[in-house]
Length: 351
Image 1 (cartoon, rainbow, N blue to C red):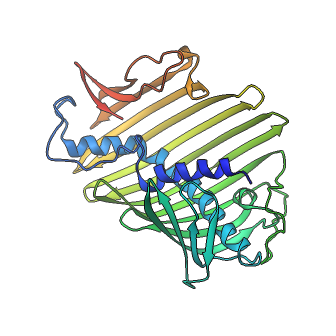
Image 2: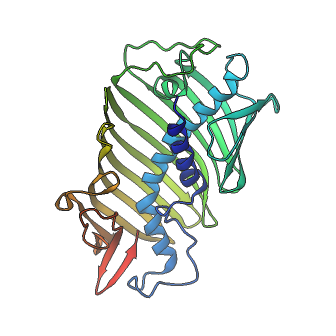
């Protein structure tokens, strides 16, 4: 396995698990309305923002949690005579490293100690099922497992339980108690993986504790041919997020399509998202209907600005009060301009 891949993973974990990303708009409601947001009370604004971002963030959380916990179990197991190991303490040797040390205590869970921005970060993982393809490495296991379930806790941030199944019909899953001798991936160069994951538990955003009951289901196609690689992910997320005075109903689909040419150092990424989410804040009902977003980047920068699109309607009590827009027109070679609910007359809610 490559170091680059897991450095990328740890960067994602920093954003998703610790809630540090710019996309995490679920914030403390605050004392009153934003004067630039049409007089909508701040608590309702925060709910509207969370309803927009929570589905996508939760989908990413479930996906990255499966990948991270699989990696951590394999990292502990390889240091324990290639026997599946779901207990002990795994300690990152240096910030940003994919190398760990392991000791066999505690006996009832796996503690993972990382360093993030110079500060210690601990995850507590309790694995209740670890059945899948053990013949190579964690990359292979995350795609091919029949029963993978765990609870992952970050004190003061989240306490989540994930149950996942993933694989290709007709491919047998090796489920012996020992791992393959080779750590390098031996997964096929092309194929389609189908997966379903449930995400339950709690997460704290801006001092508010939300309870999740969500399901993510979809497919992922991958192919590697020499210097070329393709990934095509299609999935949907449905379910609820609730907190004191707040109820979110999530219904979204998304697609990510990536083509990479290592020889040219060029990666083209297309992303599509559709949503019809509903929220109630202190008895006031909002709906985000027919949300549709599509983007295209080359090496992380905007390409084909005319392809970019953001549309959808924000409704309160059934009446349209806003439209989804980019903050500014997408510009060739620029960065993502961000999104807003445009309430008219110069008023908006940033997303």
